[in-house]
Image 1 (cartoon, rainbow, N blue to C red):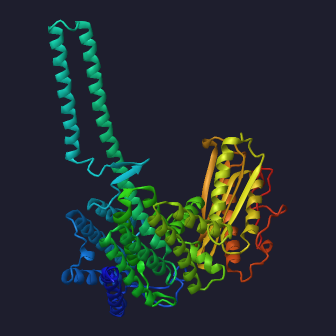
Image 2 (image 1 turned 90 degrees about the vertical axis):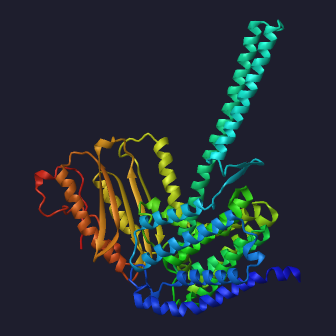
Image 3 (image 1 turned 180 degrees about the vertical axis):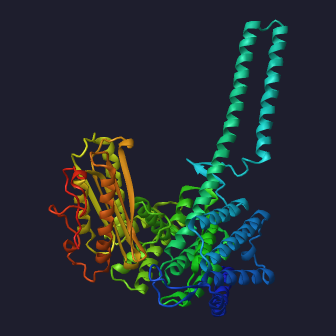
Length: 602
């Protein structure tokens, strides 16, 4: 009974926040519609039918603040305060300030729109506010030895080293006096005395160097601790933000994560962090009542970034202050699904040359729904995956070994990739890039001897590879060095990337490059990158080929994109003709090349 009694304040926090958020949402929804804080469909990325209020994050924030504030004011129990020290209070003040900042930025983004790099700057600023308030990785344990570098940049640390230097100098002076006394008494010759003085002086220098190096090493670790803390917080913010792409998904995932975080914090005795985590979980559950498919409200960037920030900060305060291996792995396992989804998106965009802020339909929830799951089925499936990794995190903390977290994470990754459910295309992209990188070292290229082509259907099922065959033929005819085609049609759930190259030993100043955007009807379908070398062809002929290629390639892509059946005959849109010239009016004397140009017939 006493044990149950200790957890009653947590239950009060959870259900109070849940009820308050339930009451706030209808009120805030009317305010949001009045002031235009809604998500309007755009038939490109936002495919819902009606305008949806973006007040999930605001409701959760006000719910947690109101409930936590009232309970702290009228019922300051031990679990809510945990004998809070001034440094702990400063950390929570920092969390509040950072949360307000990220919420305001998110609301502005939801209402007016902010560029990705601008949001990133504010996210870094919020992370630095947390670091400045004391929420950072302030010590590390290596090979059983704990290194505490929390105050390595403080004046006290410098004074400690200075005190050590004074002790060394004092000891050195004392030993010199003893040697001088022995020389004066005839017990020691001048030569031996000088030798001993040299050894003592060298030892003093060595000790000073050791203390200076230790201080410098601790300062480097402190900088690394700050950098890793900022990366962790910013990464968590964007991980939750990116997984918020389907009704109920981010809410369900974060509900599991915050609940597990509260359980682990209670187990480790971090009761204040547990209180915030369980209150957050109650608010998220209240939000889910309105956000579960079909959604009546959305989190918005304000909500997803806020939840990511709070979860990341609580993880640092509870587990990552002391960077012990099993303690560090537990939060990573707990938040693995959002992190894995974001990392895969980053790899996909980096490997295809797209902007890291580009939108696509390659996230985990998109791929699961393409495999036939309904929105609700997908939410339960991702919730199950999150539970697997979260249970591994709990067992890691209880048993103080990273084994359980590693098993949970590896199980999820191997299942998703081997079943080709998610991240398989990105795995192929990485393998292709690695193959090209290694081949550039192992093969001494003789120009134009061997062609290499790779294609990856990132999303969708349309027959882009048939279009690609015509482009590779174009590359061979015109002796191009490399052709890259990247198509991204998120409104059709289609994405395709292909890369073709010929071995070439040409120098950089002998190579020309061009990037052609592919667009039609006001929509950008993708781009094509073409690289070639100097040849007998005049420059205006090369530009003419590019013009003709672009003129006929875009309609071909548009027709294929709009085709109702995936089995549309690509050959009717695109094929190579060896009889007709590339352009009707090319003068005979201008076309001296032996290669036959590419022709697209309509």
